[in-house]
Length: 423
Image (cartoon, rainbow, N blue to C red; front, top):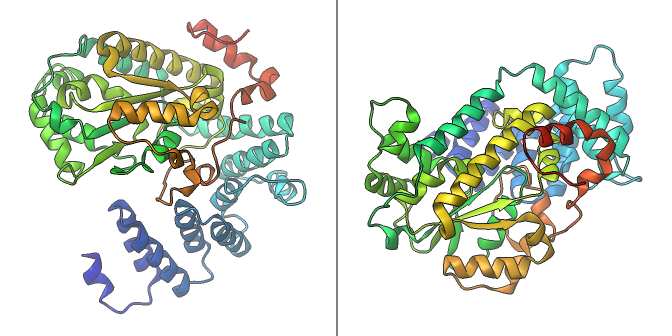
């Protein structure tokens, strides 16, 4: 369809932009990038197209080009606030080169909209954090998060109930299907966002015979498609699915006929570990965990899209984290050694040792160059798309300590919900 559309001469930037978006959805990232370039050529004075091109450039690791695109978008439209946030994430700001004063002036305007306060707040907080101005940074993280929360219709109690219900629906590992050999090709990397899942993916994808599907909903789509139409609730229907068919359906969606190992890197697949065990008993689930306060604060300081609505309020963040921890404890009990677990802290401290251990469990040859994740030229659409273009670093371990006096409410809420926190 896209090829036929491109055969029709056009000078419509909107048309090229739409085709680029569809190409992205289909995983045709190179074609999407070329189409975003054509949109910019057709409408060089429209900030929207420069922003979209900049986002595409970031996914390829072309960070200087992405920053130039953001600069151009802001020059054309100083109220294109997404460009400020994207630009702030592309590199570590320093005293000689940053955008702090410009963003402070915009936020000082009493007429600044909530949209401005959200995007600029996160951007300014990130740049101030780069400059080690932590008290000022937290002020803007807090304001941006609170503003975002006011615009969400969300009840954390609903998520708490869902996570508890998943554990009830999958009280044991189950017998699994007979497809262990076929399903041994699949690796599921799961965990909370900002816990190191992308780092693990980038390492493993550098190994011979391993490719990544990125963050897809392939498994949940297969599970729901093969679940009974009738049942008490979606959880009971999922638990009584035809898991042999779920496995086959998933493999079809995941491109299972191609040779080699396949990574599925959707963090939220931690919800489906019980179902994955039954449908794909030979698969390897890799659970990445992170110290609780670092994990929560890393989520709090990021503006997500529609996912993870619990991350904008300390009380809700603590309650969700506790519910998540209870579900993970359940998976540990029922799945046993099938669940491969590692910590972010171990991963960044000894990436070669941890990476080699994962490779051994996944039955793929380990190569030392895999730790040089900056050498992985593959596309990344995650929030870590800029960070993974540099060597592995340990500076994020214990980062919450810079904000300790501001995070007392978070620590109190975590403790009240049964989560262990540092002294």
